[in-house]
Image (cartoon, rainbow, N blue to C red; front, side):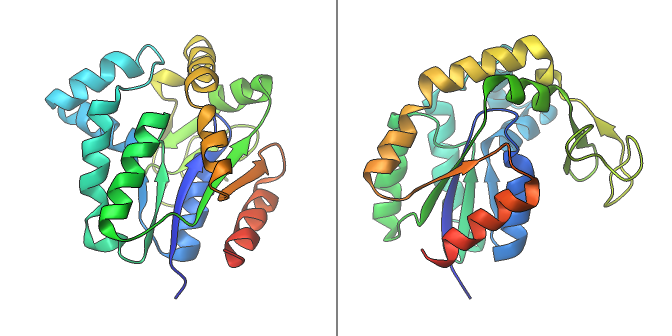
Length: 218
């Protein structure tokens, strides 16, 4: 069995959710999404959720101290032994350095950092058209990846909804925040020789095939 330890990078609306689902299924590894963790805490009304919501509602990044510890704890779980996919973390150089230290302590290292990118205008269109299943969390898009039945999940017929942070103004802010604060990560991992740049404007299947081919040569 191939073991892959990955980071998935890319601005909001680039299709990370769709590719993440395909990757974790292909390699049977856990999808560790800080966004999902925070949204779960928001739904449950935890203190972490309340703090995270203040930032997410404004389209801003959640501060490092609220993110790093929860990811570090997650990587020690048994299901991460065969690998993992980190999605939404790290977002800053400080987070990347903290992750490097934790992985070194664990005696493991990253295989690839997959960077999916696209122009800002395309990203906004993709984000505002995104729909999520209320039941299983599967991701769709009304134009690029529509469900077979309108507003119903293909997997469990759950109702699809638009996230509160997927309205146009918030999306534009999130993209600007990403470009200003997270873009340096690409250079950081490029220097380490593990970056994989993928054109996110290509068809979903082609993007996935590019990723799988690269991981086969890891």
